[in-house]
Length: 271
Image (cartoon, rainbow, N blue to C red):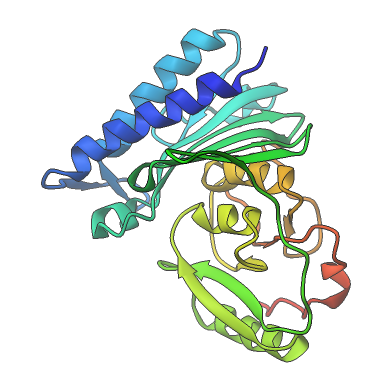
């Protein structure tokens, strides 16, 4: 079954539900982990879960805003939907438009199918890692997207978080600039950073800080399909649902998956 048309529609509908809240006064609650929660997160969650349950009633769903299944339950899942109904809640609250709707299909600990909706832009990114097909869907039509070959003669374009960073990241960016022909930083919120890599508009995204699996899974599939790569900062593969915690290790993502980055990159500063 080709899930993609239905997933695109669900991401668009979830985006519409988010924008209804975005246009009003935004009421913010605080979750147990001190992260913000809005009615938009919950509205998007309801749209996505209802649609996925109807489309694939036999595939479990894990949502940031839904039931947090114990490891004893989800460790038996070979295949499941992993969703973040609104990634970039801080960007949503700050009204800068850099927030996304994320739906990923995880199969065998890998993100194999991903849809990332950008409600304010009216854009949906899609990626099928198995076929290597990544696309950008908008009012202008559907465009195939690909990562860009690294041009070592010009400074690296680095995407980094608007909301997270710190001294270790700054140290690493300095090391990158020294190792390559300089580095120019572009701050971006949410999973858009990985989509920008997938479109070939930047070279690298070092994430030296906490993320959860639902934050990046959908865009990871888009990036993989576009020819990019993403791995844990220690050089190991980044897998999903392979451990009790849903927190990701720190990671590096790149636009050109064929370049020997792991041989060329500076060491990540110790915590």
